[in-house]
Amino acid sequence: MAINRQIIIEQMSKIHVRGNHEGIIPAFNVFIQQLPTDFWNGFARRIINNVSEDLIEVAEALLVNAAHECGYHTGYGIINSPEWKTIITPMIEQVPRDTLYGAFALVTAWGWANTEIVELVPQEKMVIHAYNYYESDVIRYGKAQGPCAYMIQGICAAFMDLVYGSQPYPNGMGTFVCQQTKGIEIGDEYGEFVVTRALKI
Image (tube, rainbow, N blue to C red):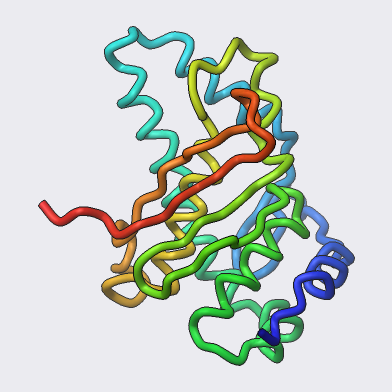
């Protein structure tokens, strides 16, 4: 495989972005911002800790969906950005498969999570292992009753939608779903995220 994960991490992590007078950072073909992970974690835990038990599953699904939508639209901008085309596109040999390897190297470079693809069946399934992700220290907001890495779940499904979606962007979202099967927040060594095709109803 031509994708060099280490080079992507080194080069992308060196790119400096700066906010404008509105506090928005125009970069990578999208508008991004820099907020501490505590912002997302605190927001998510307040929601989960303050809904009745019968609504927890619904609340969790909404948090995953928020990350899924953000990952889908932001991811599209990133993989079409000048920065991506300069650093990652020259490494891509297998289209669209290598796009996923590049995307998860970028996730690591930006500090969202140290992620790696451990299994990929094109158009069908992907398994991600993640370390040091946003929610891995969520215990400070209340004991996690189960895996709760909503951000990475959404991003994993979004990236598969972008690469192997049933329709091209912007209509391919929802082709895939992600289930978290392990989590640092519940005592596992790493988070595991399994992406499969969504069941048709």
